[in-house]
Length: 84
Image (tube, rainbow, N blue to C red):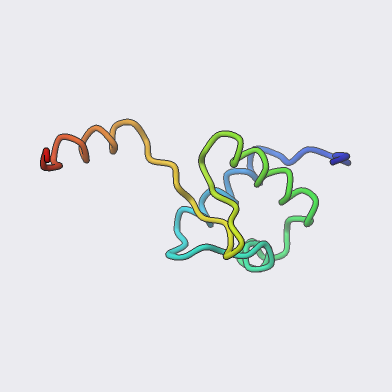
C-alpha cells in the first residue's frame, strides 16, 4: 500500500473513540459517516492497519471491532473471575 500522507494523532484518536463506543462491528463506510466525512478512505485504511497490527481492532468480514482491553481492566476482570 502506497501511503500518500499519514494521519494525524487527532484523526487516529477520533477513529479509536468511534470504535470504542460502537456496540457492534462497523463497516468502513459507517466509520467514515460517523466521523462526519472528515477522513479520506486511504487515511482510514492506514489507521485500521495500524490499530490491527497493535491488536486493538479486528478487521472481519462483518466490520471492524474494538477488542483492546487495558491492563488495569484486565487485571480487575481476572481478580473477579471464578477459577474453574
